[in-house]
Amino acid sequence: MKDDGSDHKNQGSVEPSEVEEARKDVAEARERLGETVEELAAKADVKALAQEKADEFRAQAQEKAAEVRMQAQEKAADAKVQAQVIAVQAQEKAAEVKAHVQDRAAEVAAGIQQYAPEQVRRSPVPFAVGIGAALVVVALVVRRRGRSC
Image (cartoon, rainbow, N blue to C red; front, top):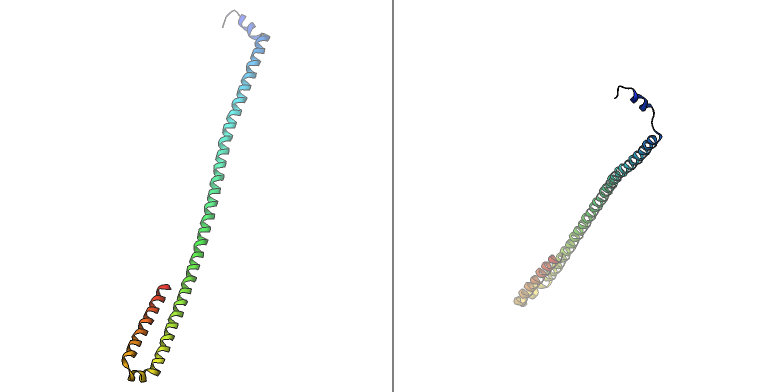
């Protein structure tokens, strides 16, 4: 600062060209600042949008996983019921085969008791062979039916 007082006079008077230049500088600074704010806002929005999308995808994936889990549980329950039905049917079939074999064995035994005494007295060898063959046939039938059930 000068002591002569001339400095005070110059401070109060500003040239119009300086004012205009200062206004242009302020306008340019405002424009640059506006652009910078827009760029920052765009970047912030992209991050927020990306996070929002990620949250949506995560929620969809969790919903889909729950849906698939539920379907798998339903299919497992259906398979269990079907297996139980098949097991019951197999038991029923085995009981039928067993009853059939017992009935046939009883019929054969009744026939043997009715005709055997007389036939055995006449010729015991063919009777023994017949009984043995019948037992072999019954054993094969039971064995074969046991495998197919």
